[in-house]
Image (tube, rainbow, N blue to C red; front, side):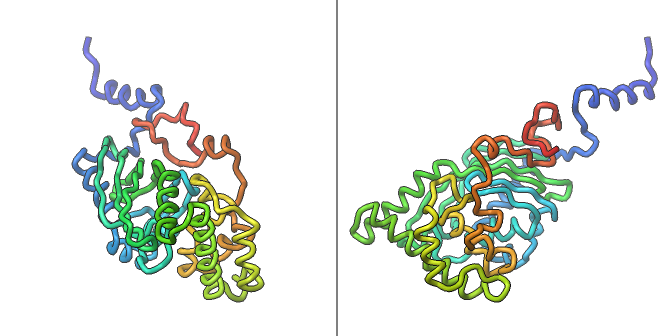
Length: 299
């Protein structure tokens, strides 16, 4: 029995729909191309290359409507916001920062297919605020690229971040010849003082969040907790430390994030289950694009 090419073509076009797959818009890179795209991102993540990305405002490494999620913080939408947080957050070695600037990386796990890569990358940070302490930070990522080699969505997890925070506190305790409790108190005071100074400098006029520096300091040190390792996107001091770095770039957007309201970023608006089950991504991470059982896909 012979079938015409028209029948065969029609069958092939129909089959993906039946199986729950849609390859019409699938981008297929080779393994080597995906490795190059992955390393290109990390090359630009390192200091001082990240400074140039930050100065671009909208990094060309991202699509304009890029979606990103970081487990210890929140989701970030759009190229400008992702440029600020992924590159600007770690681009100033002279400013108070928890982990400082990234100076080297090593990809220890990598698997890629189509336009998606999953990787584990150990990034060495120079914690310049903690006596130039060199810290290896493990970051697990899923990244998806479009046909132009731009990141259209990513999902990142900081592995062992609680252990990292404890290590920083212990290093501070050693430097002040004190206990970890004293170091935690000192860190709280230092972060609050820095955030309030940034507020006084950039959050003026309609962007003002606190009546004065004293009100700011009291709120940050007395009314909210320092925060746990998973609370950099909740109503904590650590969350405001993250966003404080961004205030200089866009005060109107970021001043509320360091203020009492938290500006929709430093707020306790999710339960544990809501965070885990949040429907966010536009495209499925499942190879082939099957979405029937993907609970993270946005409605």
